[in-house]
Image (cartoon, rainbow, N blue to C red):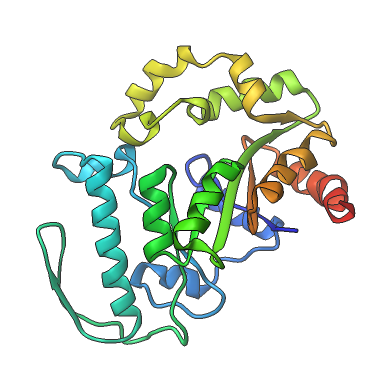
Amino acid sequence: MPEYGYFLPCEEFSPDDLIEQAGAASLRIRPSVVAAATCAMTGPFRLGVGSGEALNEHVLGGPWPPARVRLEMLEEAIQVMRRLFSGEEVSHDSPRSTVENARLCTVPDEPVPVDVSGFGPQWTRLAARVGDGSITTMPDEALVSPFLKVGGAGKMISGGTKVCYGPDRDEAVRTARRLWFDEVLPGEMSRILPSPRHFEQLEPLVTERMVRENVVCGDDVDARPAALNAFAEAGFDRVHVTRIGPGQRGFFDFYRTKVLPQLARD
């Protein structure tokens, strides 16, 4: 059975709210996690990386590269970080990045596992080749099987999914659509659109029916184990869940008392 956990919806809440949620999930913001900014880690920490989203990164200026180029940049960055993890002094110069005489004075006792996030065949090959694991959001065996075949066997396969818990399913559907309608947008749109207003222009394309069919909403106990078991059946090792919208305490209690015990029985 996979391990189950919670991931923090950083786009949706303030820092104070996120700290409270982390406490409610029995997670803690430790100094080792804060030190992730310098890539000097201790303890059971896994670094997750991805090819980025224009919405978050285009503000630095310059053109937004196509997926192929972003994946090449990501592979290069992973190689540089692995060298830094070893404690060596690193100088690296390429058209895409420059590092000059960089060295971490505090290095991890063991190499930090690097998990690669994404989807599609290019991502699959990259994650299997240079990652210690993969991260994706779809419980699809068609994503897992190619990863295993091209070099990912024995590596961690992690998944993440969003749900909207609440006693009124219709209200939960409306909340999910209002806050995360982009979850059901097809293709790469969520990765290449540069501004919130561009996302807002697409909102009318997402109906409540689309959200109802693709996001677990309401308080139906039986629907939730089925959604999580889909990850287990697809071969995932670890699954993290987050609750869309307010009411996190009720969500934690619901999963702790109603959902997780069913998974244990299964």
